[in-house]
Amino acid sequence: MSYAIIRTGGKQFPVSEGEVLRVPTINAEAGKTVDLEALVSGEGADATFGGATISATVVGHGRGEKIIVFKKKRRKQYKRKQGHRQGYTEIKIEKI
Image (cartoon, rainbow, N blue to C red):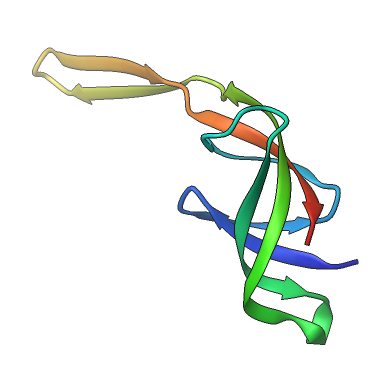
């Protein structure tokens, strides 16, 4: 089974064919095919560095769970509370 390490959204993800994973938001509609840059691809000792493209289909978009950013300084009556939800894109790896 071949694998690859892709880079998207400033992060790196290990992937294999048929896998569905969440990556930072990609500007593509659901059902469209996107090509991703492969840093490493292959199997075992036959791994090659760079030069390969990975074909993936966009399954859908969404937003992750809310995280709370809370700042406080003791004895100063300073408190700030802010929430954040990070967007993501689900992709299915079609071909390595």
